[in-house]
Amino acid sequence: MWVDEAKIHVASGRGGNGLISFHRTRTNPRGTPDGGSGGRGGDVLLRATRSVGTLLQFQNQIHFRAGHGGHGGPNCRQGKNGTDLVIHVPVGTVVRDAGTGEILADLATDGAEARIARGGRGGRGNKAFTNSARQAPWIREFGEEGEERWIRLELRVLADVGIIGFPNVGKSSLLARVSRRKVKVAPYPFTTLAPNLGLAEVGDGSSLVLADLPGLIEGAHEGKGLGDRFLRHATRARVLLHVVDLAGVEGRDPLADHGLLRREIEAWEELRAKPEVVAGNKADLLPPERVSAEVHRFREAGIELHPISAVTGRGIRELLLLLGRKLQENPPPLAAAEAPARRVWQLTPDRVPFEVAEEEGQLVVRGPAVERLVRRLDLSTRDAQEYFQTRLERLGVLAALKRRGFRPGSTVRIGGQEFELTG
Image (tube, rainbow, N blue to C red):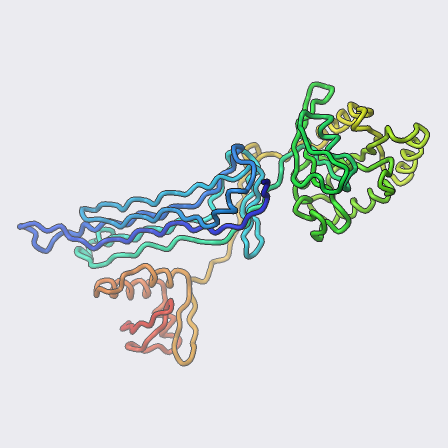
């Protein structure tokens, strides 16, 4: 079974908690802080590999989670980092955010890797809070939660030439003719239900990879027939080979068919500018004068038609040579590793670290840094509460509250919790 779409849920690991601990001896009964910090949570990585050819594995398993970080220990022991989770996907997989549709990664080469969910940072133990002013702090942090998200995986086959056309025009027969690929050929529509890849040798000693894409129909870009599921596979191809039934075996006009399918192609922005070669198959079923007439008719419409026969081999060698020249004229895009290094410097505006608002008669403080401080600190100890208030003062939160009419002893809501500040 060939599967080219999947929706999965990934979650990175939670960071470990820091520890409050003191190393006490007979000569030092109060003890020396030695609480270790927690380890970071594991990341979720997607890695492309040629050993996987389909997304079938994600039909049975859709939830993936990396390992959690270990908690800090006494004697300044660091918690163990969570184990990263590596998910292997086929080469050519596009990763999208399931909610927004944003492309997160395009794993188009073997070994390409993308971090989809970053593990949470570990919390610091009380040893990390020790300084000349705080020599025995009862302060620690909780580990951060990991990231989690739903993502959509879309597999797009990698080929030099994408063979497109209406059903029963002979695409599979052509692929079988030019390569050693054994494909199913039958006289009914949609015989091909999944893309087939074949390697063809060109007369000049080079070779090219062709992809036989399932038959398309009018309205394919809107999902009709096998629809846009297979149109997207053509986006990887550098050249499109449009095959039409020159003999019109099923009573269809080859020129009209080309126009219909061309409109479907142009409806996809990624396919609109791709170079195209048009081949008229089943030329062996027509007399030579009729073939010449069809070539002339296509030429009048501004289309260069190349008559071929997948059965007898007529015109196949010339077609492969033409495809080889087209590929040379349209080299693959420069890989990221080969791209020339370029450093761009730009000014970015300062972000507002927090904002103070009033809701239902109560002051509310919002901001990533402030809310993260509330979320991570273990505020069950007096030392932690004093440290928290000192941090708010340094961030400018207390000054902003006073400008809004705050009085010591009043309650303020930060990160969903209420605090009575004395500053």
